[in-house]
Length: 395
Image (cartoon, rainbow, N blue to C red; front, side, top):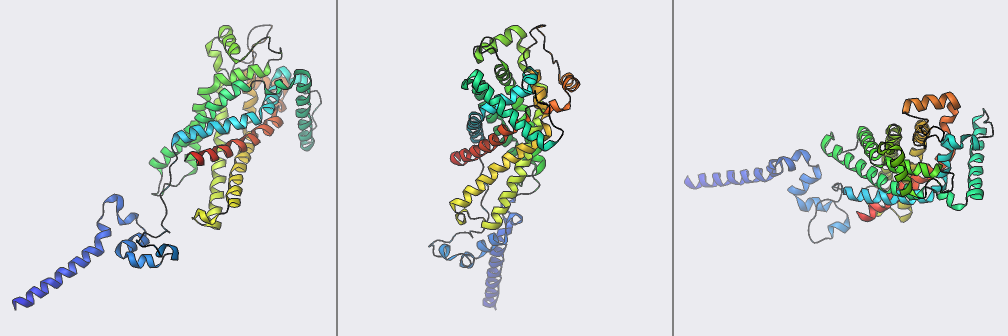
């Protein structure tokens, strides 16, 4: 009788041990609980041999059991300093390559050169206007080369580079850091998926911080590009800075800041459009090649990189068309004071908008658009493409 009781207790104990083993995955801590596990996770923990049997021959040939390769890998995080360095490198390469068009754009935006370059009446036909703007841009380029020399095409490149490196570094760093913060703290699911509003907020914050930090540099660059005295007014960037602070005061270095904040809308639109197109390209890549990078050839990688770089250019093109008038207003606000009176012609954002529209009409709000697009679209392609390559290299 006593022996049968012992056997019965032993059977019960074995049954409880079996149940405990089966329930083990469900008794983990909150961080590793079954609510965050896939069926493959639980199957592997309960029966590693059976789980490994369903793997590819390459994996099953391994001597030690390993979790299924189909499980998603943890998302790799890029450190903020990588975005900082990559943004600076990308901005520098793009600025040097497109510097002549930047000079032409600034001159066509300014009222100092407006009457000089805009001699041919513009057609009412939009298609003809495009060719007129292209011809106008080519004429300005040839005229500057003949009368002022090749160096004039790179005038303001010094402060431009001094501005581009911190501006792009700060922009990419702030955008990346803000997006990472929002994803970690406000993502609705545990996969930490990106949402459009996160791109929007990150873009606004990046534009605000970048504009505030770099406005004095862009003012100096604008003054040098508009200087037609062949170095008589400003010998170099440092001389221009001293002259502005001495004659107009330190606060004058922040002229056009309100228009720069308005221009933050352009940067935000570009970021949002770029992110949406990038996500679409990545989804297509997953559908075609799957999650294993080894399925892609070198050609596939190059084509995807080219598509993402092209997406940056298209995003910039669309954002520029929507927000371009702020560029003209910003340039006007940064012009040197009128020589006759010693006072600036344009004193504020709203006053500048009204005066330009009154004196020159709405079309003047798009002065210099052609060289602007010819510069910024390839500049964005080069900049974002270089940025991605540097991020991959440093990560």
